[in-house]
Every structure is written in structure tokens, then in C-alpha cells.
Length: 235
Image 1 (cartoon, rainbow, N blue to C red):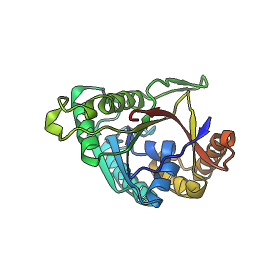
Image 2 (cartoon, rainbow, N blue to C red):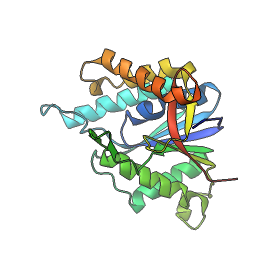
Image 3 (tube, rainbow, N blue to C red):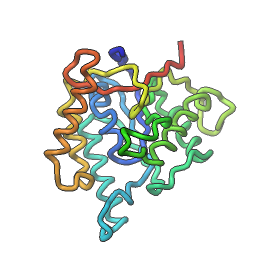
Image 4 (cartoon, rainbow, N blue to C red):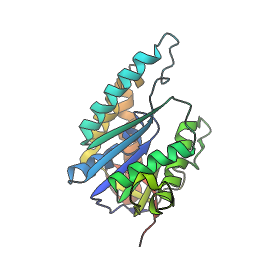
């Protein structure tokens, strides 16, 4: 395990649901933004099914989650937020999604793309990784390598762009840890901004975020960390 040493001029985070980026990489995104990097966020789903109560109104929930997403993004210093508004549970790694992601990669021209690791399905025998996470991860991988870098893929989406690095979160094969000690409090605030997802227990969620960051940071000797699988695409 190594300590991550990247300071991109531009970074693009691609996640399925409004709260996913904050949970997975909120500390690192906030760190890069604080260092002057242009951090861009793409959220594929509209968040309209993210509730356990049967009485929840989907339309109202979508509006609530959109507002929570913007609040969290503002806290982290995210430059732009793009929502693709696919219904929760309806993400498929299809040509339409890949085209949209290629267009955003070519627009923002990031040095680094962060996305979920689609190969991670089962966690500790107690959690099955959401299908939206896996499909978003596959679409992000396919959009980055090779589509965005090759001009004959989706030529209508603008000039080709080669991403230098991929960082995959929620992975079973982490090999780098980002030191997010200076931004862990921002990450916690961003996670808590998604009040509709907290089931009324903000203190418990806050504690979990700190504990997981402490655990992630331990292998590289930092107080708080976020772990990723690093893929180097350009040399």
C-alpha cells in the first residue's frame, strides 16, 4: 500500500447516486479543490428511489436529493455538478451513457477520473454492491479507456482526451491511500448534508465516517485516509 501523490489540475468524479461521491471520495475531492484543482462531479441517477418508507413521494425526494447534492458539492468546493437523471435502479452501461460520459470527459479534460470499482460485488457477507454502482463503474471505465482518448469513438462529443489516472473507490484491491486528514471534517459535513439518507441518526453516521477514515489511513501512517485502486493510463 502506498500513499497517493496526485495533484490534478482537473478531476472528474463519476458516481451513481447523489451521496455516493461524498462517502467514497469526499475528503480527496475537497483536498484537490482546496489546492486549486477544478473538481467536477457527475451523478448518473436522480435519487428518486433512495428511501425505505413506502409513503415517500418519489418526485419530492428527487427535489430534496438534488438540493442535498448541491449543498454537499458546495461544501467540498466542487466546480460543476452534472446530473444525468436516470431513475434509480435503471442504470445500464449502454451506448447512450458511455456517450454522455465521453462528452463530459472531453469537455472537462480531467487528469484523473474517480469512479466506483465495478468488480466489487460482495462486502463482508452483509452487503451486495448496488447494481447502479457497478453499472456506473463499468460505464466510466469504458468511457475513459479507450473511448474518450480515441477520436473515432463518439466523434460528435468533441476532441479526444487521454485521462492520465483512474482511481476506483469501494474496491477489494486498494493499492493507494489518500491522506484526507486536513479535509475529513469537510467530508463529514458533506455526507451529513444528505439528511434524507441518514434515517435520523447523524451522530452514528458521523462516527462511522471517522472510523472508516481512520482505518483507511492506518496502512500509510496518516490520521485519516481514503483508499483506492490506482490505474495509470498515460506515461
